[in-house]
Every structure is written in structure tokens, then in C-alpha cells.
Image (cartoon, rainbow, N blue to C red; front, side, top):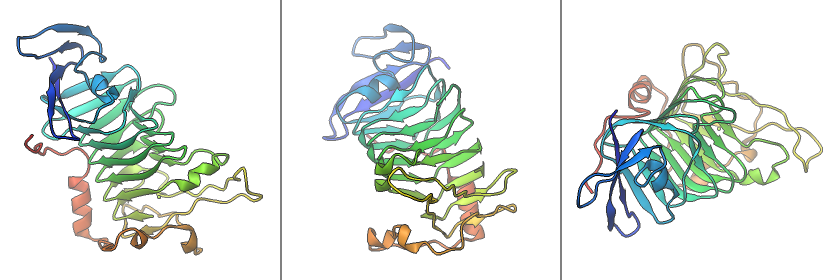
Length: 293
């Protein structure tokens, strides 16, 4: 790939803050007068990293398709939309996206795969982050997790994503000593867990060798006398190729929040072959246009 382009647009007021083109190896900044080479790095003016760290609200879009090789975690600040629609953007390398103490962030239509290194997650949401939406992303093959949501991060939606080639796909809460994590609220809907191992609705689970989609672990919280498991409710999901849900039959309704408490028009789509087709073909990165600026 010769160059990676992105435009930084002010999303709060709709004003154009300028078009900046960045690169994977050699970055180019396009101004009113021509081009300037900026060096061999993923951290230059106009790069994705540069846009994500800025303090002002930004809608980050890409002018061309390509692969961005990260040399470390890419920190995303508040009020950012990373929008891969209209191009095919892949993040890989020695890091992923880190959403740390931020709010109002959207990550849309990216491929994130092949991350290498200790504690390297595709998307890491911690601590104290909120109002996050991860939509229509393809995530696979990271040395640690694909999505980690911990340390009192809450009000997070994961939708229409495709998870593959991984055996510890998603972590919600990390340690029984983190009692503040009881505030965590996560919604996961219309995702495809492909050979991957939590209220869960209208997802499709195709487990690998272990053939179990959910696993409850007993752990003792720091402020409790007895060990307790987490609580998962699954509705409208499809478990295929012999996959077992792994859910407890014992009732724990009082421990799981009800979507109807937050959404007046709450409904569940029935698990069907049609839903299966939609999830297998319409989750993860999609070749869809970006809306006009």
C-alpha cells in the first residue's frame, strides 16, 4: 500500500477542520499547496493516531483502503468516531485500540486482526469509559483478547461484529476485587461468534473444539463471603454445529437487567434460518459507502 488517507471532520458542529492525509510507512499531508513527506511512522500529523489523540470532537474517515501497522496501543480520546465505511481498513501489529477514561466513542466498519504482544487486545475499554459503540467490525487472532471491558466501564454496545480465530473472545470484568465493576452494562446484539468461545440476544455461536459458548466461573468478590458466578441471560440466539449454550438452568432473573426497563419498544427477533443467513453475511466489515459529508 502506498498511502493511507483520512479526513478529520468536526462532528460536534459539522464544520470542516481540514483534510489530512496520513500513511502507513510514508505519510503525506495534503494542504493547499502540495505534498510533504513526514517520515516512516504511524504517528505523524494526519495519521489515525494523531486524530484519535486530539481533544476536539472528530469524525475520522479514510480516503483510501489499506493496512495500518500499529507499533503500540492507539489511544482514543473522547468524542471520536472512527468510520471505516467506504474503504477497507485493517489494523494490525503490536497494539489495538485503547479506550481509556473516555466517553462518546464510535468505532465502525474496521478489520482488526493479528495483534502480537503480551496483554495486546484488539479493543481495550478501561478504566471508567462510557457510552461506547463498536459496530460492524471484524476482529480475530490477537495474542490476548478481542474486546476487554473492565474497571467500571459501562453503557457499551457491541453490534453486528464478527469474531473469529480466538478462544477468549470477550472479557467483561476482570477481577473479583474490582467490586466497582457491578456498574458495568453491556449490550451485545446481532454478532457472529465464529469458532469463538453476556443479556445476549440474536447472536450466532459456532464454538470450536470445546463446543461451549458460555462459561460461568465462580469467584469470590472482595466484599463477599462466598464465591459466586456471573449471570448471563440468552434470548433469541442460534447455537449451531453442536454448540452448547453452557447456561445454567437455575433461575437468576433478579440478577440480570431487563432491556424493557430501558427501551419502551423492546422486542426480540426469533432465532431462524433467516437470522442465521443475516448474521453470517452481514456482520463484521462490509463494503458499504460512507454517507456524504
